[in-house]
Image 1 (cartoon, rainbow, N blue to C red):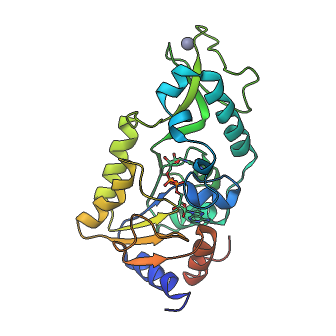
Image 2: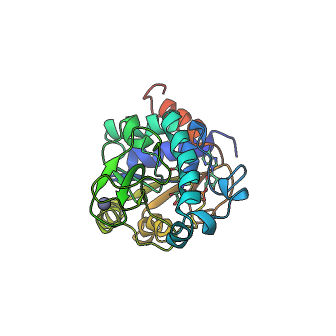
Length: 249
Ligand code: NAD
Ligand code: ZN
């Protein structure tokens, strides 16, 4: 099969779809310079998630967890949307994509212009108090680590979902609703191992919809997807826009 075939096939599915959605993971932001967790160059090669991204780790050592987050927040603040984020926003504008469901916490889909975005795992650019209902956006890395609540003095935590924590109910319900309506899901840059998020694209298959899987490496959806695009997100979406006659990103 030629390199362009999956793109041509994806364009055909997208044009004939009624309600297409995009489901993304860390890989869609890799080309913005934000490391993934798994896959080559993934963060978890150097850190163990259970040491850092759990409520237990935060209780044990909030400073260590916050130092790791400070490093990631800085990286996200310095990052910009890449051609994949921009193309996904362009496809929504063109009416070809109806929603983006993301596991990412970096906010890059909204920044790129996507408007119907479901953020399943929260935002690294928000904090919330562990004691009261205080919540706030972050425009810079907190100067004091670990940061304290200006209202009650309690510990602030990143407003993200940690391993072992439930997903925000409203976002999860929105994701289910979108997947329930979709006849096509384009899965981009996810290993597909973090549940329950990873099951959302399977809802589309379960009622007869199609799947395009965009990933340079095989993953959980390989073998299930109708189209396997073994390439980076930025390359795939640049080729796809050209194929659809929607210009460059
Ligand atoms: P993951 O790290 O488990 O998997 C990343 C996947 O992206 C791998 O399958 C890899 O092959 C693929 N990939 C790498 N480079 C790519 C590229 N250029 N184009 C397309 N695909 C590429 O990430 P995940 O599946 O999202 O799950 C892990 C959890 O990590 C999520 O819950 C998410 O909240 C969190 N996370 C978020 C960010 C972020 O917000 N940018 C970054 C790291 C991790
Ligand atoms: Zn508080």
